[in-house]
Structures are given as C-alpha cells and as structure tokens.
Length: 228
Image 1 (cartoon, rainbow, N blue to C red):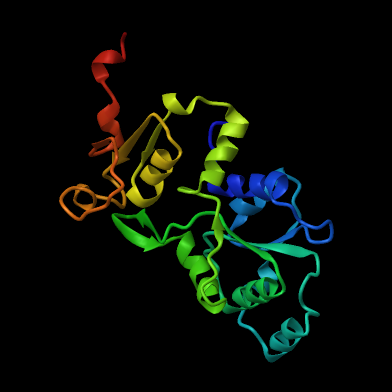
Image 2: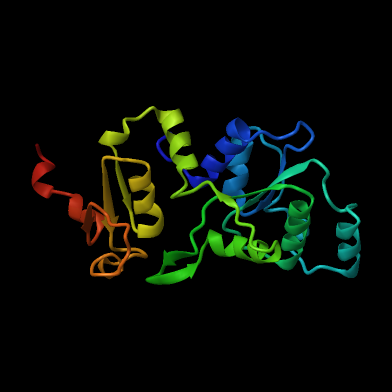
C-alpha cells in the first residue's frame, strides 16, 4: 500500500479519470506482467502484453488481417506503452493500427534509459519511441514522473500533505522535476543512478535543481541515532 508505481498510476488514470466510450474500454499493452497486474486490480480489460501469440515475427497474413481490421479487437480504446522486454514488430503493428483507429496513447513513464549493472539501458520511453515516430510525432500522455497526473493520483489515494513530503530520486529530468512541479516540501537527488552533479551545477546546466543531494541513499542513515 506504500508503493505507487507508474503502472498503477496509469491504471488509476484509465479507470477513474479517462472518459472512454462503453464500447472502447480495453487496453492494448506494450509491456510486461506488472502492467497487467495493475490493470487487473482496477478491473480494466486488456490484451497484448505477455500474450505469447504475439512473440513472433509477422507473417504476410498479419499485414492483411491488421489492415482490414479482422485481427484487431474493436473494443480497444487505449494503447498503453511501458517497458517491454519482448518488444517486436508484430506488437508495434497492432499498437500503431489501434492508434490509427483513434485509441488514446498513454505511457507508464517517459524514461529514455534505466540504470543497471553500472551503466544505462533503454527504458520505457524507448519502447514507445517507434510509435511516436510512426504516428508523425504524437507523444503519449505519460503517467509516470514528472507527470502531475501521477501526483494527483497519489494525493487522491493517500491524502498526504505535499509540504511535508520530499521527492528522492536519481533523475533530475523526471524525479526532481516531479517534486518541484508538484510543489513538494523538498527534493533530494541520489547520485547512484542517471544524473550527476555536473548535470545541474555550473552555468548553462539543467535549470531543474534538487534542493539537496547525497552520493548514496545510505548517507541518510545515522548509526548513532539507531539506538535512540
């Protein structure tokens, strides 16, 4: 109950905020089981995602059936893009044609990269990028940081005091911006991830600056205070 992921934010947005026609409430997912779990928690029907029938190369018949609509679910009203470890051309074909038919384009988050094993790898934003290019530059509404739609959803669920909250994160362009634009009481950058001090220090650098920073999250732990 204390973890509010971008996937859950997307599910909340779709179920409680987004106004969809009664016949267009199914979500086509570009993503993994975590997204499906959050959609299911809000009783949102979905297709795509981890469906193994889409884990293959397209055949000639796929082009025909997608083009004429016979392979498409007429109840799909949303394309939700997240981090997809099995992203392929067949999934993109389906997603693109749902968007062409008027589906709402959403993303769990817009992170271009994610840190792992001491380096960076493509993030959820990179999975949505082919659709952005294919649709002529149409950007999805992101339900992750720094989207204030996510902040509103969090506040609506937890009823917390923004002035007494601090945003802690490793990305200046998403985490810290999220806290500043959400008018939280503080922002703390952690230097173990994407952003470094050089990204915001000095002339001409990032105009989004954290209130404070630490080299690592463990720097906040005070062993002397543990016994108090």
